[in-house]
Image (cartoon, rainbow, N blue to C red; front, side, top):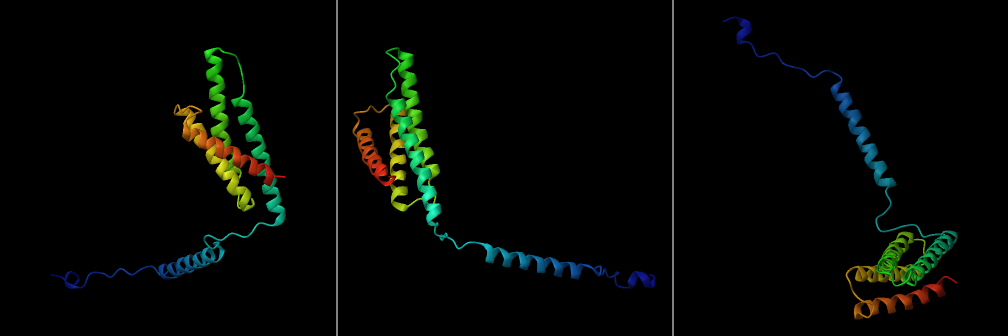
Length: 165
């Protein structure tokens, strides 16, 4: 055997740039982690809305409430005659106004809306959605569940009207 066959295998050495590159990547990672921690808002805490933001949010929600209430009233009280197709069309539009109106209101709520108004709008919107789903499920207007949601929605609507003045 030759000397080269009995010698130790050749050592592979890492190129000279790997250690500095690894150090640079580590420094960048630490910097990004620190930046993310400093920049991230504390969970569960938001800055209080200014009075101007609160007033704008109130106006937006009150306008949305007026639109929804008008749409629901218009669609549920429409009369296209006794034709079966016309009756079904009116019922479908009433359900759409009720379900869509509830979702529309919920989508307008922000942290800037005054709490009492937000709670009332949320309750009204949820009642609208419950009424609409009940209608789709075939519940009649005199069903106790539907009557309860309708009565609650009416009371809450009156409260919202007062809060929006």
